[in-house]
Length: 338
Image (tube, rainbow, N blue to C red; front, top):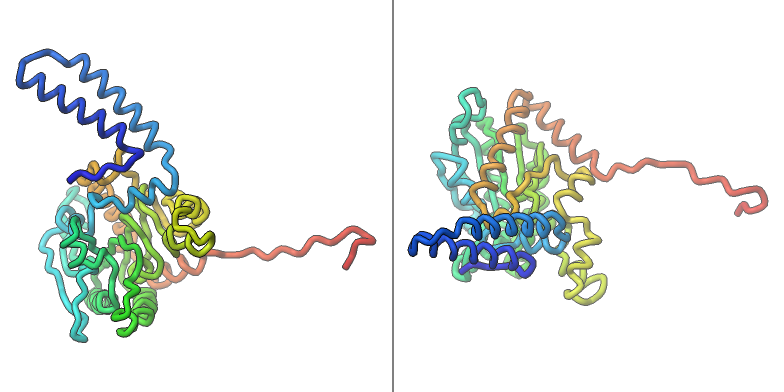
């Protein structure tokens, strides 16, 4: 079932009309090329107008769209020889986090990333209710973060780059997760990722929610798809705290500065990966291809660095965030001191 957001509905309806005219032209042999071309032009202009000025809340809705590519879609398109590894070696296996070994597909002849063995981690959501229950709506339990830690150590031991795909509303806040040490698992993941001495590239492909996202986001390079969001709290959660009304989510989204362009301006990420007009959910293979190109470009720059340099690079990157500059207080005019 196609899910259409309110603000994109005019474009979708126009595209349906174009498809109907093309079918009619093919079946009845009627020449409707002029009408089709005119409608195509209208659709392009309308799409450009709508998607060229999206609000933070509209981008949040796009980031959550159920037809956006998920971690396993990227694995299928960008990698070969995928072998998923399960379990946290403590008796649990979380399905909201996927991870395993793979090789980057062969691209240009002189690409140093061709056939490169890597470790891949990512949050995985479901396309329907049954899948979402199985994947816990992309909300990872501590078992998933402990498996990520295990794969991180494996990558570090064998010198394998790590690629992570972030798409979660946040870590699972359920009682069973808290009983098994959710906060400790997230903190431990952040600590262990900061110690890694291999290239790490993280891509926010949808929602990047709080510590649940940061647990696999301590990377040498952090990228974001154009219509993804990255924030310490969801707009609904922020609105509930500040205004006691989740309906104020759009207002909160503006204040939180959660969009890819905001995160780039703030120095939280290193690059915005542009999506095709209409969004990654409408043209998933185009979006996946652009993410793959960005990953290869950054990875090629990181591969020559020594293990010590990679660790230092990651430390310096996060240490620079939120840097403050102290300035002397202004001196009050004579007679106004105190």
